[in-house]
Image 1: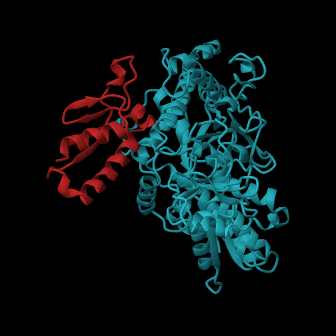
Image 2: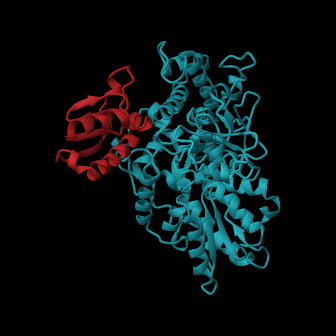
Image 3: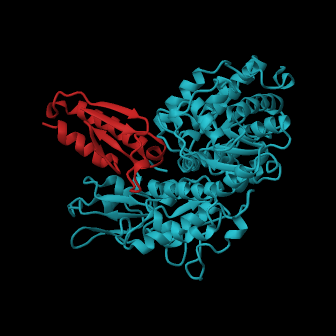
Length: 501
Length: 89
């Protein structure tokens, strides 16, 4: 969540903690009716026009956190309707993942140029002179833009000497790199499912907190209470997420105290992906395919599949680090139930894929995990230290930061075949990913390895993070430097066969 | 001046890292405009859970302690204001 949206963060995370607490304590789910009152007690509104609306929105958040759909305001439902369907100890996914809480949406106007009070109706009025559609005229008090005529080219804004013209857009739509935000009949945001790639950027940017994903924490906690073979795998961006005093070892131990058998770094899977992608690249590019796209960001691959279907075959066939890590555990314990913990909500969808669903059983975010720590009264910084973590090489640990994937694959390929020079290009917002793919489609990226990441800065900026980008980047680099191996080739956990070059 | 920011689990969940980041930013503001601030060192420390929220049913997190005085439900805004009021000339 955007760090400066302090109130929204509090509401969202209190809901996670509340649901986690109910799950751990085995509270009867009829009590869910009362939960919004406990989160927002009293009769005075703090955030919106009325406390009743505030609580109604929290009710929707509670439902989404339980894994249920938000209710339709036009139909009668209780908060708990449908609850038996999700009161289970395994994943139960009800589409869609990303939901607009309709009555939390304030129907912000769509993209437009506005003239502000700064306008002095100057004599030169270049705004009118540069407009290609004659949409700007000088009114009684200021310049006026005819919104019917305006084609949103922005020339008037750029030429105004008083900075009097501003561009305005709905934050959700501005954040969406694939143009998937439409409007419903009341002008509220509506997600176009054909285009949405579930990156979650609209969720973190909406200043009203009107968009939310669904969670699996309730079902996960039930599974943790009922099963023994529960394993957690944690994404390379976990460093620094749970407070400046919580060491990586304490985080791992804290996760075990939640009921997990063991914890493994997903950076291990990143090492495996690196080896596979490097070999795949050297083998296929440029003879079989003109370029290769990385496969670890799920929103990036969905974007290519949806918007550039004829290019989809050029995305690497190698499984993502999440899947490789899960496969590694499954090999050792065939009964393992595996939970991916990461910054990403798109992984919740990747885990449902036919070729993935038997390996990854739950996906939660760092934010949701923090809610579980609070529900279970776990103080990470007070945990006695256990052994040092050494699952992955420095290259694998670098996957969390934009550029890290391509860098690892490039270095690996150079080790395998020093005679080959690999060109690399990366994009780390969905907007830029789309631009990069347009270039690739036009044949301008022949021989390249393309790294696509939907979040600005890479996984460390994912929608499910708690700590700021700079904080996490620093912690990831520190942890990277503590790795005992520099390259996946030196990582002895990985099969010799895969490491042979 | 000594500012202690609780980074126990509940305070971290409800935004104490953001408060730390905001205080870091404030340090830059003070350095750039040092003529207007007293020559007093701003010591910031992230501390383990102080147990405030465990002893009460009230919602108190995040907790920040400035020169021994505890602030409940702290935000970057309230903490920075308090710091600035104390050290601005």
